Image 1 (tube, rainbow, N blue to C red):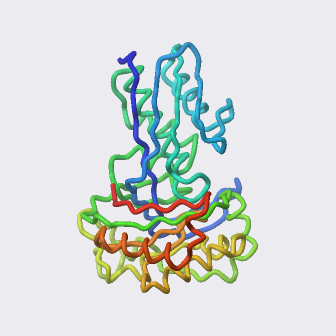
Image 2: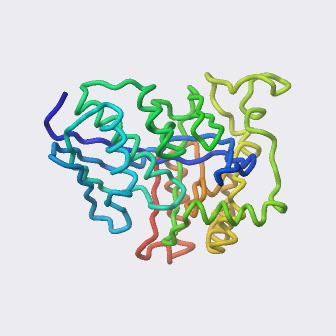
Length: 304
């Protein structure tokens, strides 16, 4: 157990593939997705305290008792019968409400940090049980894998030991989108959204696509056309037409591997080399000077 300050890094994610399977009776949606962690991090500092305190200089981050971080700390205390408190200071770098999973990643990092601070160790199965009750993407961020195949609401995960290291150009407009609004728009317009083959068929090593996702191989660029897909993309563009114009401009730079991540509005493009991503970033800024304005966020980052 530790009574000293602890610093944690919480990575972002992109969805290389996201297919909505159905709307559930509880209002959530069953999905099929391929998660990838990327080297864009929030910084979380934990300090001993008599009570649970959440602090952040980012005014877009909720810090009250209904915030995800506060609820995660309470859930941990109740699960392990801990009487101590903690001060959580969050420095945001991951775009907020943009499809990159920052809130879920922060919660996962907090759970692991509290386990080390208060218990001196953690049992992954116990943390997964807590995570499943807090948010759909949190179980993925608890895992050590850079890639994972997920079903359910994104909580049923199979870590994949893929040998890929991609580079990404991340572009995020100032407008924030709530995932609930995007899914509602998807539900209203789902009849015009084209379905793709199930992700397991793309990842499966079996010729007929009946096997489990391949766990130890590299994803080739020859499958990117079928792999990169997001059922929510049209719904995002319907709400925020700027996202569609931005994506078309980026693809016009001869960057076909470009997609909205999750429920958007953030966009990413995939590259084999960092140099390629930097060249694309410079071309974007030159072609669309307004992306330099306040509120826009642009990053070049690799797979974690």
